[in-house]
Image 1 (cartoon, helix red, strand yellow):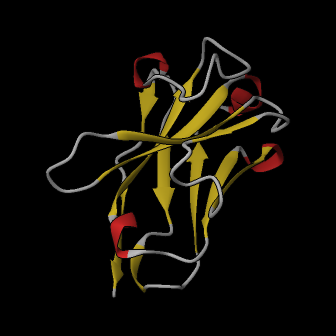
Image 2 (cartoon, one colour; image 1 turned 30 degrees about the vertical axis):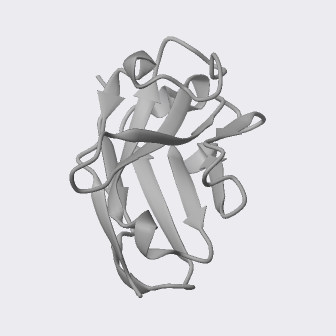
Length: 128
């Protein structure tokens, strides 16, 4: 079992930066893929970014790769997602997920179906 807890969401203004964090309960989080997805109101959940077990490989959705940065802090069993130049269309619930069957993402985008564990999500609202 892996428990994932996201934090860092909130109400921000367009153009601001924000960093989301995800803490994994399982100590061996350094051995598997983790990722971020988001779901805007009325839309399907979509892939944002994923990262390999050691942080050495990262994948991004083309729509966010210039403004989003995923990173991993293995000593703290956490991953982060920094979002720069926030836009109103970035407003969504952001979910952290773990793919414990892989140490490197299989492809870009990382399929939602490959992720076994999910956090509860953290709301990001960007005002214009």
